[in-house]
Image (cartoon, rainbow, N blue to C red; front, side):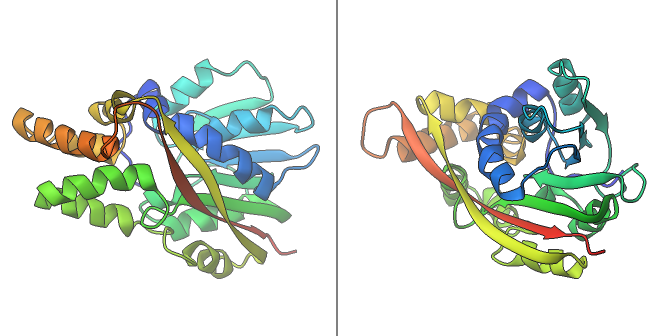
Length: 268
């Protein structure tokens, strides 16, 4: 199985770290990517099922399948699933287990920038989509449009050279620069390629609400913090808290998050 560069540990941890925001992003992404009555839809890199369950809310779809390489996320999603039309399975985005042309629509939410071979994953998404099917994906604009993440990464990088490398990796992940998704779709031979920018807001009740996910075991930020000793962790926490407060009392904050999106059609 091709390696993912996302540190996955527990479904609950992912829900706290990103699931609440991927559910929000799934709404404009599905509006962009579309779905039609009677379709069989594949969600590649489904995580805990944010997009899969949004698709399942449509009673006119015949089947929805979610695939992810992280067993804890698939277990979490499966426990939450009451719908017989919906299935989840562990799988590799770079080597999908399905036959050619098995699906009417193939979608991916926040996955391609964490795949070790994203071009191969795109080719696999096209392979399992029938002629005429839509293949679509979205990823964060980590460098230019992900304010909540930059607050953490920029502050950490100012304190620690190792965090500078973390920030560089975050800003140079594949498929996250302007035009990269579109170019990949054209290279994969998809036609009628369209792109969009999708925006949501990430809202936090307090600094603790913002900080707590970084103390878990899911995602690159938490993975980095786990390498720090207690004094370094406290120093980082205090600096990030100062950036979060930004001269005001603790309380709610709302940050814009922008994602790139692309869709194309399998020719034939």
